[in-house]
Length: 82
Image (cartoon, rainbow, N blue to C red; front, side):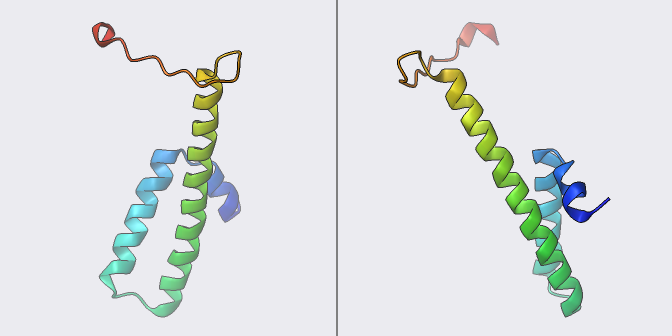
């Protein structure tokens, strides 16, 4: 499985957790340059994947909350349904 396919299979939460772990490793500053570059490349792919998933979720919410006349409608949450 390629690195892109590997990342594409991750949920937002999984990708974000891995991205956080990579940032912590790089911030520690005790990695060889080649490892840092490799982690940076993977982190960039993870960040792009997370952003794509967020963009898709935002579009889906917009479509779900748009009224027939094209105006976005946001109903308040029903506090009693929790």
